[in-house]
Length: 524
Image (tube, rainbow, N blue to C red; front, side, top):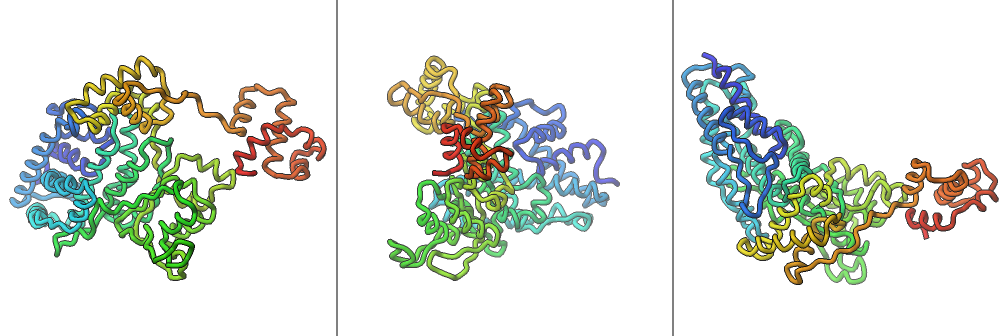
């Protein structure tokens, strides 16, 4: 007797896919629809948090859970009764069982995550016992023992599988919690963060990548005020942590291993001290030995380097060494120390421009950009979904004044924005919106800075003017001569490249443009 009928195979395949798909992409909804058929309830495609309703419930989850668990039990009984399965059906059965078990243990895995919201609780959570693991192993044995099914499929080690379940739950929780909004740009950001944690291939991740994702540096780019640190926290708190089956504990706590460092706020010496640590006497003020973030960070931890575009060339060289060799030295020492964690960096600068200007090393950039995430501006989010404004304001208002008072504040803010600030481009992004809400809360008014388009750099402006045909031949020659001279720093070299006389080059220099170019190129 075959294990699956044609109809069951279609349903089971769709349920099995739910263990593999990115939950923040539309593919998840397609799987739900295929699994439930006529029972599927249409709902909002963008899965997000709503301040007025807590975690937005998926109306299909309970049906999916019941369907998966009942089908898994039925198929297990058939295997016990002598049913046979080829490799394809065996793999479908395995992934169906994994989905059913994940849903069975989801609530119990969620409790320590909620308890870990504070640093102190998170540290306790690392030592917390998980006796549910014994039941989990018993369930695995029950589902994979009958009919020799385990011999036809790759069944992961129970402790590793339990660790993956806990990681999936944490990753979903923190992405859901930190990245607020119902617009498509917000949804795409959540999906991108999920891939930064698991990659696009969950099967490969569970087999091998879980060991290696910590070696991949993530670079978060985007305008200031768009939540880059929240993205970094979601990645850090969703990392894989091994489970010790003997002790019934995870090897590390999950929420206390995030080490953020704002590089723009520190001098080069302090950056090196905070990152690498120092030996007593290594510089003025170093009165005792200090452990830096790279040394304090455990294997499952994350060091977050905010404003990476601000660091000096010397610090860039030291950081490049960490990324290439996974080793470093404290200031004042020659002893090599190992870095075991993950690096996440962020910047609102155009690193491509910084490299062209010689202010950022290309080799460091290519070490940073193996995985990139771009946070969208608030203007992009509102353009996609104007309702995003009220949703974000409601979330902020609830945190500021509580749920009972939030609605009145939301009305005040949205009324002010519509009457006094429409249209407005929100140059400060979500951070500015938060300050707008506070201003209206206190004074019932907000006067933003003038919203003007960002000024183009001299090179970009020349490119635009040339493409638009706005320059005369004389103007084009003068500005191009000025650009080549600014690049070379020599009248003679500029003349050689341009095929002109040195005196012609000197006479053609556009002084205001040269000043702008020198500022862009970082020259005095």
